[in-house]
Length: 93
Image 1: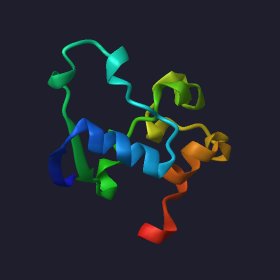
Image 2 (image 1 turned 30 degrees about the vertical axis):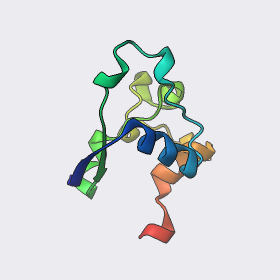
Image 3 (image 1 turned 180 degrees about the horizontal axis):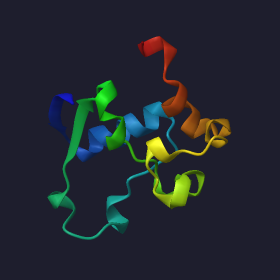
């Protein structure tokens, strides 16, 4: 993992919206105190694939419900929000 830096929760939320992830991090519904949360931005290398977990609602698309990308089932790439992780983003290399 390279280029690790701390970012604000607001920056993370904006990134999620910009990416069209469909994931919202609603601090109001999370355990308190909200100021105890930290977000990080990092660039993962190929060897970091084991660090990627799918959002909890996609665990049904992984072997034994682990939610690990490396455990994604063969049919998983048909899911739009999983496809980019499996196939990558051609515009980013």
